[in-house]
Length: 193
Length: 249
Image (cartoon, rainbow over all chains, first blue to last red; front, side):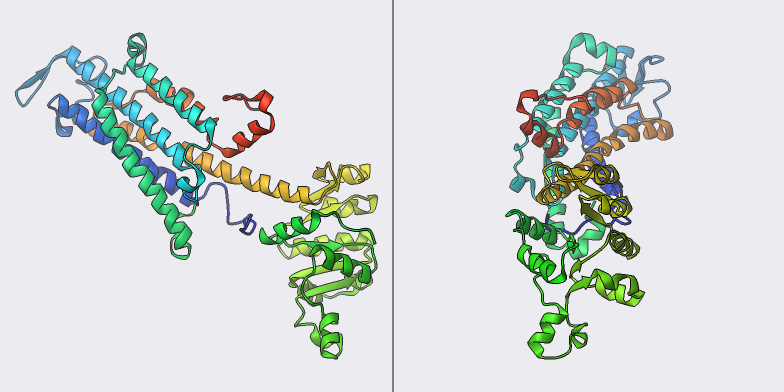
């Protein structure tokens, strides 16, 4: 209550800065973490990004046309389906985990979440638990895996992805809030959503 | 002179700290109105009359120095645009001995100056101004039916401090909507980019349509219902109806 009322002509609900924050700041962090996990997954099968490029019509689909051979390694039809399912399962999990981490930080847009209290809203905690439970059920339950075409990725890879997500999202959001609090005259035009 | 409610000065201070300019419009005599305004904190700066007494000069010569003004309703119809401009630029304003027509003019002048005007009132004679204001606020207990009909907002306990609560709720709602939108949009890039890469460089689809639906219809829903502190405060007010996932009205 110590700030002036919003200017109805300028302070709109959805602003270019808000879209920039969602799509090009946090959205790209989510995407980057997803690609990091993707790299770890395909690396565990001795594949690289270049190996997978231009394969979408014939290989690594839900119905590959046949065996895929690259750099002396051959991947059978079932292996390709399995790799694709693991890729999709890990990508899905990383989006949900990224959002679970983001929801704690985006409850404040100006003050530090550590000052506000990370676990201060019990409904957020419950919501995160429910969402993670749903995601785990979808990816790790055998019958559902077939329906959604997603397979459980190695837990260690998901752990690395989660740690990277925490290491990126929390310092980034806290950093931008710190700049807004202390150097608002310089950063407000870019960072204020 | 009836004393103001004890919570009113605090509420006015909160309005001032929130950048809300409080203007008193009353049918009382200017002297009474000024005394009440000083008592509750609407006026804390000297008016031109105060400065004139202090300096021993004519009040008209202190017009520009005074940051507060008490305007007699009888002067309102004859005031020029320049005079209105001077009055509206004062930090603290009291309009005394005003008629319903003059209240309407006051609201119109503030609106014309680009202000968002919230007008409080309870009588039938306040109704035109309540209707004209961007936010007409009527008193629920003592207010007339006509005033309540004309108003956008009815204060059920007739307490000015409730307006401050309404401002807080409005700001909280706006901020929470912003946070919700900022949160909601962030999961779109990792959903859309794989499809773009699939289309342009032939990379295998790293997420399929069913999983995108699982995110949008299952996991995100539990996040949405839990994101804001508004929901928490709502639940705390109605603990017996506490539900983690509560369907919208």
